[in-house]
Length: 396
Ligand SMILES: [Zn+2]
Image (cartoon, rainbow, N blue to C red; front, side):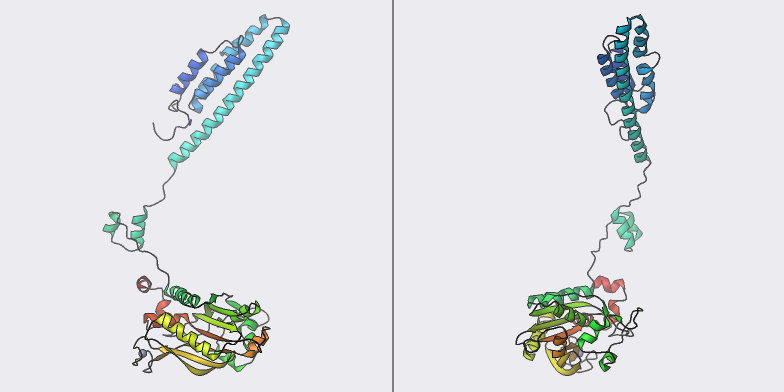
C-alpha cells in the first residue's frame, strides 16, 4: 500500500476494476433482498455496497449493477406490469423512492472518493522545499563544507546590539533609582524641538544644532528631533506632577561621521520636577548614576556651561575609563571625559507648559548612549558600532 488510503476507509487498495472494495460491494448486492418484495431492505444493502467501494473507478463499475439495465431494481420495475393498477402505482412509487435514495448515496460517495483521490495526488506530487536547519545555518555562517556535509549544527545565538544593550542597562539603573521611562516621536515640530525649549526662531542657540528639516509646508516647521528634550515637554504637558522620568531615544543631526560623532545617535534625557528640587539633587543624581553604571573608581564632576533650557547649566564629565584619571589620548591627557549636559530647568520652560515655577522646580540632564557605550566598553571609534562588521557585532 502506498500513500494515503484514498477512500479514507479500511477496505480496498484503490485499484481500478475488481479491487477488494468492489468484490465486497458486489457481495453485498448479491445478498440483497428483491426490491419488489423489500424495497427498504434492498436500499439498505445497496447503500452498504456503495460504502464498500474504495475508489471512484470501483464506483463506476458498480453503478450498472445498482441502477442499470441489468440491476435488480430494473428487473423489479419490469415486473410492475403484472400488478393491478392500484398496487402498481404504490409499488412503482416505492421503487422510485429507493432509487432516488440510492442515487443520492452514490453521488455522495463519488464526491468523497474524488476529493480523497485529489488529496492523495496533491500529497504525492508535493515538493519538499525545506532544508534541514543545521546544514542551512552552518552554510549561512560560513562553516566548512565538510561540517555542512556532516550535518553539524553551528549555532550562534543572536546578540542584542551594543547600543540597545547600553540603553537597556541605563534604563535599569534609572528605574532602580525610582525613575520611570518615557518615549516620544522621532519626527517633531519646530515648537517641541526648539521653541518650547526656550529657543524661539532665530535664537542663536539654534546654531548649536545642525538640523534635518522635513520637506513639508510651511518650510522648516517639521524636523528630525535633534535631541530627546522634546519628550520633556510632552511629559510636562501630560500634567502629572511630580515628574521623575528618563527618556531614551534616537536623535539626528547633520554631522560628518568621525570617531566621536555620527548623524544618527542616541541620547537619554532625564527630568525631575517636584517641589523643593535643588542643584544638590542634580549633582547627587549624576554621581549616583555614574557609580552605578560605570562602577567604583569612576566619578563625575560638573563644569559651568550654557544651554538655553536650563539655568544654571553644566556639562558633566566622568573619570576617563581608559586611563582611570591618569591622562591618555582619549581624554586628551585631562583624565576626564565629557558625557553630557545638565542644569536646573529654566522657569520659562516650566511656564511654557503651564507648570507654576513659583511652586515647582526641577533639573534635567542628557547624555549620549553611544558615548556611554564607547566609554564603558573602551571603543576608540564610534563608527565601529554602526559599520555592521560582524566581527564587532559577534564579540559584543
Ligand atoms: Zn584617559
